[in-house]
Amino acid sequence: MLNLRDVTKSFDGKSEVTALAGINLAIGAGEMVAIMGPSGSGKSTLLNLMGGLDVPTSGQVMVAGKDLAVESEKERSLFRRSKISYIFQAYHLMPTLKVSQNVALPLHLAGVPAREIAEKIALVLRQVGLEARGSHLPDELSGGERQRAAIARALVTGAPLLLADEPTGNLDTARGEEILSLLRSIHRERGTTIVMVTHDHHAASACERLIRLRDGKVEGDSAATGGGR
Image (tube, helix red, strand yellow):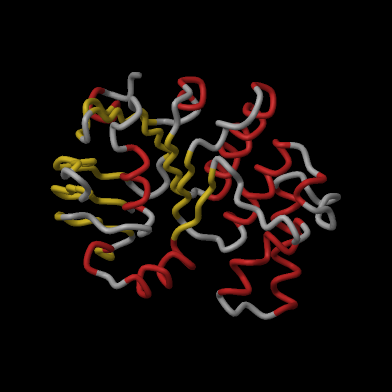
């Protein structure tokens, strides 16, 4: 599903900052992987490259057989619509749209017919336990419910790759556990490839594999040591 080869990423400013310094990484279809590391280790930069939100300074970023490093911004955007979905720590729900309308946004962008959209929304809201909240606005939901709505929006396209950036970061322990349980269920039932960036060791323990970054490099990978964390 994901294959990164000699990936570097630098940012220009008063002085050049190297965020990633030669990443080589393969993540197979159907894996559930956590990425951890201290602040500034390159976690978010790596996730953005995997999702085609940015391109590397050098190297290959192969996602489902396509090298996103050489695609145009428009081509990457079109690719994301069917292959990649995102869950953000801050939810990024449109405050003036109802939950069902927020969830429907990716389908409208993809040109899905209205009748099919209604069916897909009903199904995915049931999956995340929000079937009774579709007509509510985001500010009428709890933090856990908002994250569930964001997950529903990510799931509705059926994309095979789900990228999650600190999905439990804004939640208390109980709500965070609900979200982790939901992600495990999605992984198990759909076979979705999930890559999660997190600072939370408990959240990371929900995944089958742990990759550790430091100073823009892979410091450790449980896949290379028999899966132990």
